[in-house]
Length: 74
Image 1 (tube, rainbow, N blue to C red):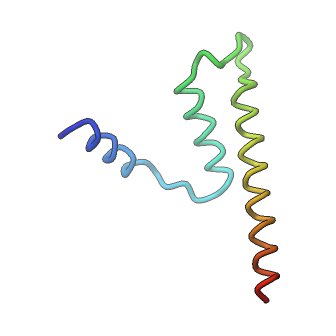
Image 2: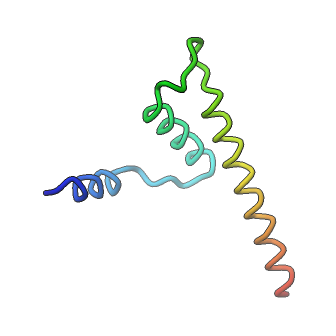
Image 3: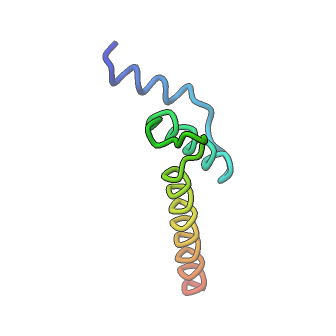
C-alpha cells in the first residue's frame, strides 16, 4: 500500500463532520496540529483565529448568494 492509499484510508476512517460547529472545531484542531509554530507562548493562536473568521465570512457569503439565487428563481 502506497502513501496515497494510506492517506485515503485515514480520511475515510475520520468521523464525518455534520455541523458547522464540528467543521470549525476540526479545522482549528488540524491547523494547530499542522502549524504548532503559530501557537503563542500563552496558548493563543491568532493565525488560527483569522482562519476561523475567514471561514465564517466565506460561509456567510455563500449562504447569501445561495438565498439570492433561490429568490431569483422563484
